Length: 140
Image (cartoon, rainbow, N blue to C red; front, side, top):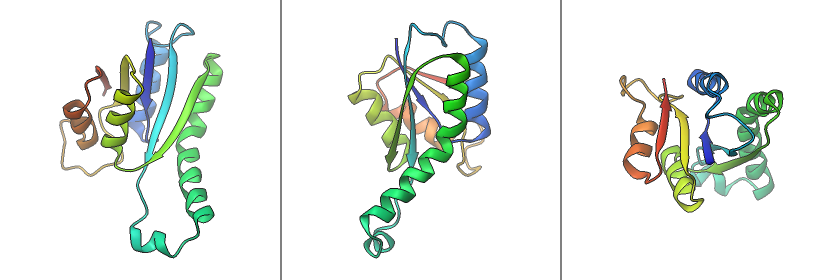
């Protein structure tokens, strides 16, 4: 199974990884994992005064902060995973990647670093469910 793991480094990302570790069906060498994080774009006016190398460095560093503990998690499990950092709105990035990459499943936490306006389900999770044709496993 080709699984897209959406991560933002929040406590719900940690809960999602713990869920995967506790359920042998979802975590194992028989699956292909891609971990994705979406870094919010720097506003156009600010980006215009930065050189491309600085901007790319910022995006890469932001993604690496999220990936560092997840790389460790997958390493301890002895599982290979691909790590992809993309720039843009998280829900759009996740849904587009799942569709274009022909993933079988998206796994993500039910909430993240967003605001508290969506208490039952996070706004990114809600948008991914609405725009993604790929099945989504939400971990609370």
